[in-house]
Every structure is written in structure tokens, then in C-alpha cells.
Amino acid sequence: MNHSCCLLCGRKLVALFGLAQQLLSRQQHYDWGLRALKICLAIAGRLLREHRSAGQAVNQVAETQIIVKGVCLATMPKLTFEDTARQAF
Image 1 (spheres, rainbow, N blue to C red):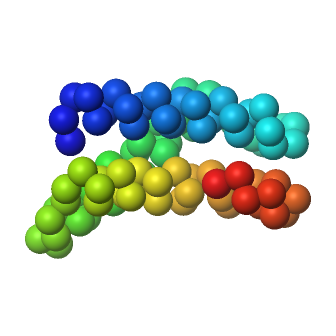
Image 2 (image 1 turned 135 degrees about the vertical axis):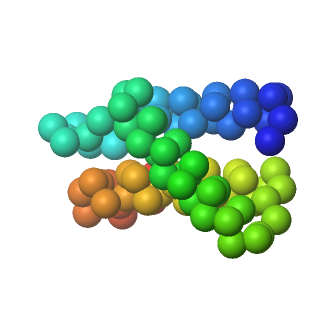
């Protein structure tokens, strides 16, 4: 992934976390800060390494999809049913 694409993905992730904090219900167990962002990126990094070790080609589109999957895997389990029904992610 090139530098400009990384910046774009980073801005989108920060915007996503900001919107989630604003639009979803207030829950004590929700964390939309740097810790949660780090967890999403760690999961995405693990998924990316798995794809590469399996010999699958990873282009810019595939890498973006892996990041989205990492965000979903990290955030969806902690959402309440009502917030999941809003389809925020």
C-alpha cells in the first residue's frame, strides 16, 4: 500500500470511529479511542499476514477489504443488539 493510500485509509478509520462515538448509543463498554483503533489495525495486520503466507496476492483493493474485515471483527461483537440493528458498520 502506498503512502497516500495509507493516509486515506487512516483518515477514514478515524472518521469512522468518530461517527461511531457520535451515532451509537452510550455504553460503558464502548471504546472508540486509540486503544480500539490499535486493536482493529492489529487484527487487520494479522489477516494481511495470513493472506500473504497463503500465497494470495494482496493489492490495494484487497488490503482495504482486509482492513474493513478487521474493523468488523473487532467492533461488531461488542455492539448492543440495538446498535447492530442500526447497521453502523
